[in-house]
Length: 131
Image 1 (cartoon, rainbow, N blue to C red):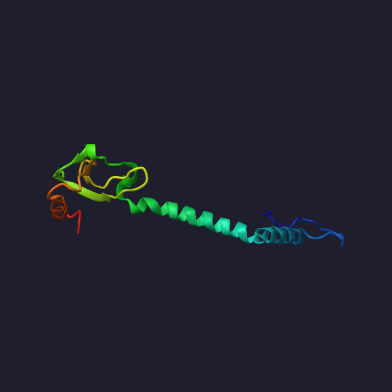
Image 2 (cartoon, helix red, strand yellow):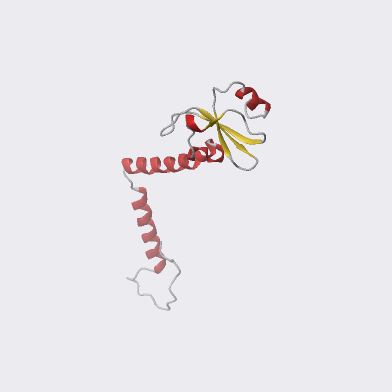
């Protein structure tokens, strides 16, 4: 949008449009061209906006960005660390199809816990990781 400040002139010929009317007409023509999107363009624009909003919400679904790690059977612990600050259940997902519990200790270390470990759920409830 152009700067619509009036030009300092003392004489204006009758046939020359004023700077205000030029600004108004250019603004309304740019507004009309923006508003004249086709239905498919409006749909794609809406779809892009929704995709961005959903992408912004994904990290909130996984505490402490567990989506960046993947537990495997060979890196599982059987017992919880003594100080657990957070825990998360890793469910099978794309590129990581193994079920595990991920816990973080006071030092920030992440541990992959075997969900089939005897007494693990009881330990996690005791540490208030599971309800």
